[in-house]
Amino acid sequence: MSKINQPTLLVTGASGQLGRRVVELLLQANAGTIVATTRTPEKLADLSERGVIVRQADFNDPNSLAAAFAGVDRLLLVSTDALGEPGLRLKQHQAAVAAAETAGVDHVVYTSLVNTGPESAVLFAPDHYGTEQALAASQLNWTVLRNNLYADLLLFSLNQAIQMGQLFSAAGEGKIAYVTREDCALAAAAALISSFDGRRILDITGPAALSQHDLASLASEISGKPVVYVPLALEVLVQNMVAAGLPQPIAETYASIDTATARGQFEEVSGDFEELTGTRPTAVANFLAAHQEALLPETAVQ
Image 1 (tube, rainbow, N blue to C red):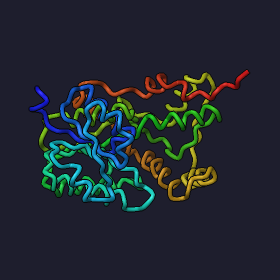
Image 2 (cartoon, rainbow, N blue to C red; image 1 turned 90 degrees about the vertical axis):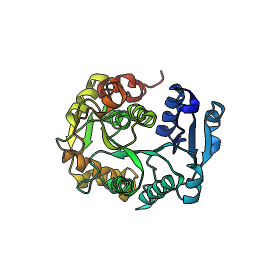
Image 3 (tube, rainbow, N blue to C red; image 1 turned 30 degrees about the vertical axis):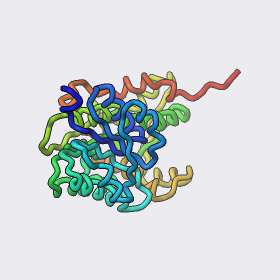
Image 4 (tube, rainbow, N blue to C red; image 1 turned 135 degrees about the horizontal axis):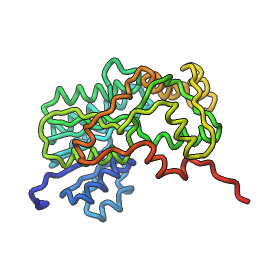
């Protein structure tokens, strides 16, 4: 298909890690006309040099969104990182959905969260659920990608666990089907390129659900040092994070992920990623092995 006949694809938050990677994947796929939006266009100068149309867009300024989305066929709405002010992220997303509808966008792909309904224990889940509701109430066609937790987050937590010999969590015996950020980017790019023009919800997960015991075992294998899982009460976990310097609301937000894990809200393994992309998602063990240098404590210089 020639570029002339291909739809114009837009990626929001293109200066962030996920958004930028999706743009790179679209370029590799020769996907046609690609638009990237960001609050800071100067950060995307290299992408502009590669033929990407860079537009300024601020999710706190709905008028800028309507202008940025003009002439776009399919749009990837990457969830923002505005977690500091309650309700702000949902307001931003609702403005983006309204702007996409006003601009005549045909299809919106949204990066959501698995099991994001009212029953979720995750404190930021209502942002995602509200955005899904806004899409459902619109005239738009859409694909909701309900991503599981990033395996990438394990590089920090398991690095600490290896250094201490202990992996602390309030997740109980719950399991998580971790998915890599790279796989989430692959899924987003595939959904954006796809000709699907209806409405669908896809669960983007890794190939297996792992417990904290499993993660401790993987950390032991990689480091050659014993690492054990130490279950904590939720309030103790929050106290420890606050003592480490996190503000109480942020600590409670992170801890709510453990509560959801203990309830089994992240354990479902889906085949949607493979069906969408034609490839298998990356296993946590393979991801950690590929990033071994980030997990092992730095050795002292002799």
